[in-house]
Amino acid sequence: MADAEVRTATVADAAEISRIQLDTWRSAYSELLPPGVLDELTQDTTERQWSEAVAESATTVLLATEGSWTVGFCVGGTAPVGETAAADGSVPEDANHTGLVSTLLVEPRWGRRGHGGRLLGTLAQRLREAGNTRGIAWIPEADEASMAFYRGVGWEPDGTVRTLDAGGRPLRELRVTGSLELRFE
Figure (cartoon, rainbow, N blue to C red):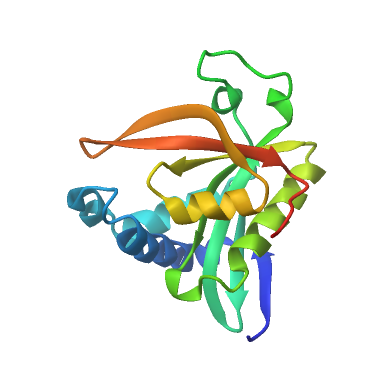
């Protein structure tokens, strides 16, 4: 394997982040999302959105590279308190010290090479440095690969479920949570 690393994204990386998102969603989520939703996503629109997200200081955007290739990215920061609430609406004591992994995508052709683990490990370190002690992420219920990945670092579903409107089709997501002191199997 060529040199693999994780670095902080810059606005100049927005086109690559957008490409990875679009390619990965079209490949991995084509059965979860209606075709119209994926067809409406354009390189220009997502690139513009990623430029804004990378420029935002409250969010950490990381890139995984292998050699000269950009192969994945991860986004996170301290979770909004509403994201930490239990299904009954109660807010946990550590709500202000919980990190949220908003997105973690590695192109399928670069999978199983450790990029996801490096991305999550680097983000977990940054979240700990910001005072967070626990992390959460939302996973589509049908996304068995992502669930296995998070379980592999010690995160488990906590019983909280949400349903999103994905272009007129419900998309059920499970929340996973765990320590930011990751264990890798």
